[in-house]
Length: 172
Image (tube, rainbow, N blue to C red; front, side, top):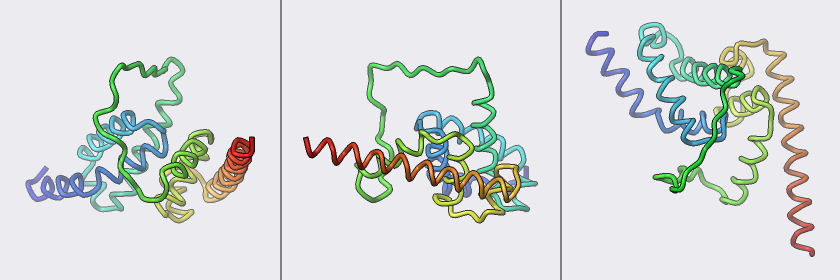
């Protein structure tokens, strides 16, 4: 890679890593795993920088992240157990809003099937169009619409259950 391309890549990594990490977290629900996936994605992006820099680099990188997470889920033998007697080195970044609401929404999001979660995160967190989301996920526009519709319906149900439980818990 030429030095000007390396400079472009470094600049991209410096400016986008944190956003990519938040995206990966929303897709997988684990900050440490999100960091690992982003690092692997950046390595793959570096190898393909010539191709990626001629396209939407963000879309290309998000697609790498989604594919890495889906591939990880496909491995039947892959089981991750997190056992630690230490707290994480740092807290997740504050993205605004009430922390309790964020926790409830994140927990509900993690209960969605992985493809529905990816569609919802890409559409509403990353603010991608249906076409862009389909390209990242490697599926048709109709599939994105279907996954998004089902994901949102499931989220609404989960959040309604959470509100009901919270209201009943306060009432007792």
